[in-house]
Image (cartoon, rainbow, N blue to C red; front, side, top):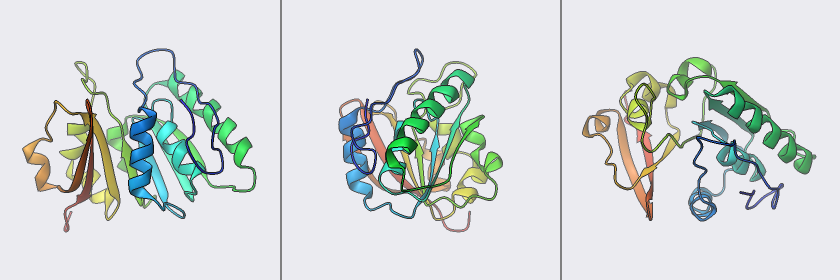
Length: 191
């Protein structure tokens, strides 16, 4: 796993030992090609895992990046990866903060933040008691907090978006990469 482009191009990232499914490099490359340019964006990386999506955004010129991850050991790995990327960037001092918490509560953890881009890579098959992408999409408070931000939700291609989510979100486009589908969504007006 590595940073593909930008200030920290080529930096190798480490994933936590277990329980994390990093976004494949080809999916990550396609995702950021579809998003460019993101210079000046405030980015939030939810269900952050290794932090690779937010780190890629930081490398490509995002103004600020926030990561939300519930597992404390995983948070320490994100912080270690962030230190490597920040050391490589040097001349670009963007605010970057890693928060330990439930990604579905980002609107409570980051109340004053107005994101431009939200990247969410929840578990493909959440275990009992674990939250996933449907929990984000079905929460009207999360949609209201997202405002005009683009939400890119990564999930298994075998899983459909919950129909009830369309009350809160508008699908802009979808891209499939084998077992991975990226959903590009905007909160419905009036949320």
